[in-house]
Length: 116
Length: 116
Image (tube, rainbow over all chains, first blue to last red; front, side):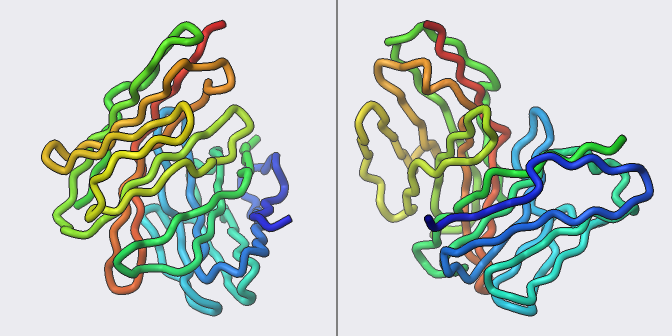
C-alpha cells in the first residue's frame, strides 16, 4: 500500500546523544517535511525539501539536521544541540510545492522521542 | 504573516449531538488554501478536506460539513450526529505558496470528546 512510513514509533535518547528518525514514502511525492508537535501546540515546521539533494530550514531548525539523498527518504537527526527534544515528530509529503491550487500534505504515523 | 486561530481547545458533546469546530485565519495572500485534519489517539494526521480561496462553496461529506466564509476569514467544521469514533484532535491549517515553497501554518487544534 502507498503511504508514509516512519520508524521507530517510540525512541528513547540519553542526553548528549544524536538520534535519527526515519521517514520513507512510496507515493512518488516531490516534497517532504518534518514537523514537531508538543502538547497543546500545533505543528511546527522543522525542515522541508522540495527535491532531492535540496532542503531548507523551517521555523524551528536549530538542533536538527536532515538529508535528502533519495526522493523516497528524508531522515531527521535530532542532535545533542537540541535543548528540548522530547516531542512527537511527524513526517509528511506532498505531490509538489507551490502552484495556485497548492497541494495536500499527507502525514506518517509519527515518532515519539523521549529524552531520558 | 499567517495565523490560524482555533479558539476552542477542548469540546465535549454527548453522542448524536451536532458540534461545530471554529477556525479563523489571517493572511495577506489573496490566494491560499485551507485544510482540516483529524488526529486520533494513534497520532497520525488524517486529511479531511482542502478548500482553495477562490472556491467559497460549502461542502458536505456524510456527517461532515464545512462552511467557508471569506468575509469573516473563517472555515468552520461541523459534525452532525456525532459518534464516539469522532473523538480526536482536529487541526485547521492555512497554506500559501511563495517562491515555489508551500508554507502551511497549523492551529493549535481542538480536542473533541464524544461521550457515549
